[in-house]
Amino acid sequence: MSNPMKNTFLTASVLSILSLSTVFVAAPSQAAVINGSFENSLTGWTKTGTAGSISAFSDAIPTDGSKQAGLTTYSAGVSTASLEAFVGLSAGSLNSLGNGTVSGGTAIQQTFAATAGDVISFDWNFLTFEDTPSSNYNDFAFVSFNGLTELADTNSAFYDTSTIFREQTGYQTTSFTVATTGTYTLSLGVVSVGDGRAPSALLVDNVRTESVPEPASMLGILAFGALGGRKLLKRKQQA
Image 1 (cartoon, helix red, strand yellow):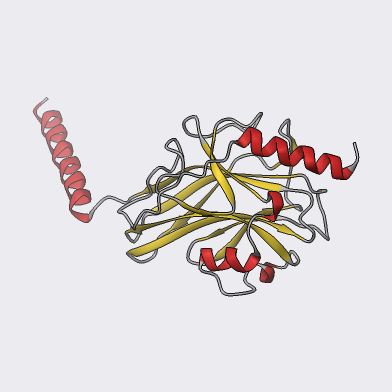
Image 2 (tube, rainbow, N blue to C red; image 1 turned 90 degrees about the vertical axis):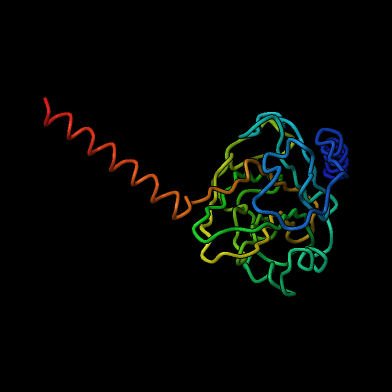
């Protein structure tokens, strides 16, 4: 199959298979991540580009529940300038990661409150139709949370996939520990580098906040443990 025909087929296939939803709720900041498993479409998340909540995607299976977020660079998503503005990055930030000139992409994000010591975690899977590795078209996935970090690119470790893409990294987990209590925005995205003809995608699932116990609660746990220890010791002494 010729490349133009293949690209047309891929575009039609992914838009049909993914059934990417256009329904989402621009939610204000809340106490913790909501709808982190994307079971309720993209409620609680905002998006730019082509993204939605999807079920199992061939051999790319959700890690929590029956849904996962799907983001793709088909048609290059939105422009690089629009993508950086959406994420809250300064102009040129995506190019500064060193993969080449970004031609556009897609991102989702959610803003929430977090307490110092909280752990923010999420599962992700990067898929691409580019050659791996590719020096000229080094598409990549990224996360922005108190700084911009690359998750994967065409130089990552891949294995074959039965999806419409060539290869996938498989699901992996990334975590951040909150240093200071405040309001944070978690942004996840995928971009095309170079001509944008061969698409890439990012699957995201199980976004969660794991909170540390409150000091009062921890003291209560310790006190309970100490009381139990004293009772056990007293029983042994009586015996």
